[in-house]
Image 1 (cartoon, helix red, strand yellow):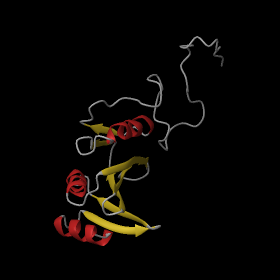
Image 2 (image 1 turned 90 degrees about the vertical axis):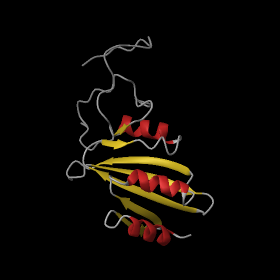
Image 3 (image 1 turned 180 degrees about the vertical axis):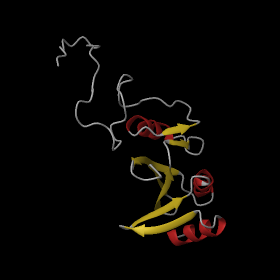
Length: 164
């Protein structure tokens, strides 16, 4: 099996909703939000992509589709990697923890840093930043000046004094 076989299969099954390209020696499959879970499930079950390597979200505030969510999946059996890209207009997309349990922490990381809400996630809460942290630091509209990194309390009794 090669990447062209995967692109051909999904392009025929979902005309106009799937496109594929090879760029920088990487296989990219761009999928419409309405069918992305069906495609991911079929990639796992039919094409043996049993390993989800990573999930990465990026914020594009000047586009209509303001977020990209990219699923980095790998088939050990066929020795092929595919990046499945889904473009979404707002920060909401369905969870894939029902397809890969390993997506749990990856989705929480993207929720924490980029603010993408994975609907149906079993435990969607911050994983890297403290609960009191305001905002999502990997969004392109996150303020670079006068941001609040911490609150005004020394929660760990470290003797930290907060000043202006």
